[in-house]
Image 1 (cartoon, rainbow, N blue to C red):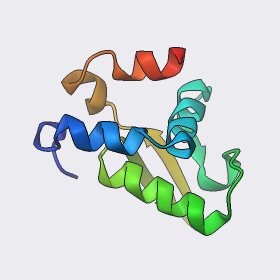
Image 2 (spheres, rainbow, N blue to C red):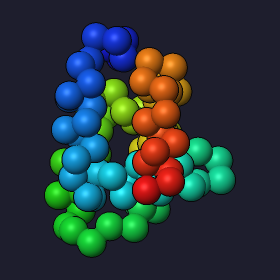
Image 3 (tube, one colour):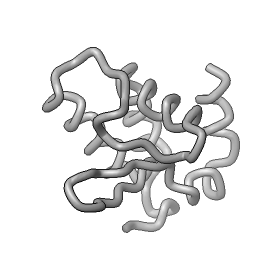
Image 4 (cartoon, rainbow, N blue to C red):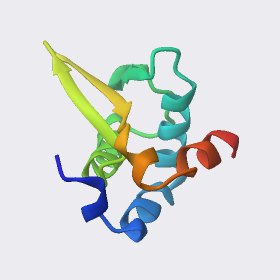
Length: 94
């Protein structure tokens, strides 16, 4: 995983600029255990399209992914708040 400071803020903001990706991050922020499997998200696009959006969020280092068997779990990268304070709070309140 790249360090957050190596990823420019414009890349993070671009990744968050799509409503589907923003919704995915909001859903993660509302999750009780801060982790959701890919299949548990609410999304109104095809699975392949949603997977593409998730890949963009992972590549931007906004999300962390871990695989357990055949399930993929996603969570917010805890380093994002350390490097860019208040981004997650603004997303949560939007």
